[in-house]
Length: 330
Image (cartoon, rainbow, N blue to C red; front, top):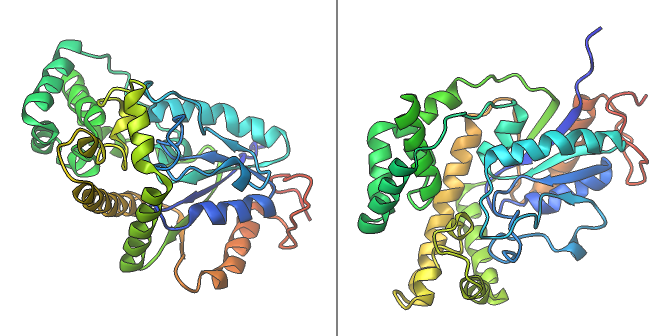
């Protein structure tokens, strides 16, 4: 008899599309615990720029992998995958539905399909050489080198994501195999009973929402948040400081650009990031896409029906469910 796979619900989509609010409703209705699938929300003290949900907004729903690292410390997709491999069975053992919510494509896909990450060791001298190239000629020069040698990885990674750009070049240097080839060769069979929901909307409306969100972040004190991180000694080259909203404001705080120019750059970079997110997710299989636009409320019944059909449970869901039994409800 084949052992039944553990159920796993995943809600993904580009930044500002509305994942957080829907995730709360779904977690409450389906008795879920939320695992943040956002590579930046792991960092303590980085709240405004990451649009991190506040504890008072969580509606009593347990959230995982938020505020678990200091900004000085790196965090990787492999770290996320390892944490999820522990959290998912723990959540299921409590009779809850494991529920990943986020927009970091590699993180989410690595868990959904059990990716095996490269075991390639490091070459410190080569890595230092590339870092020095970035310091002298700018991160764009290293990104251009990656674009020449591994165009697919370069298209996926932003030039400012210098740590991952360097790692992609390092893997190619050590193994002779492109990172994009390694990703393409990963198995696509999920170890879970997987339900993938994707939120999307008209591109112009999504961009308007992005710009409104950034304006709100500025009103809430994003500049002070970034300044506080620099003042406490978080290195400018730290992985955390390469996140959107942080790397764009550092030059302003250093007197290299105006605040207006920094905000324009942040809005542009965030629009481009959302486009890359959608491109990544479009290559994933089995996602059931939901329009999160103006008539989104009309799609809620559809979403609940998708979950009921996938997990073979009654549509008579209730916020007072005591447990999620993974398919044994009648």
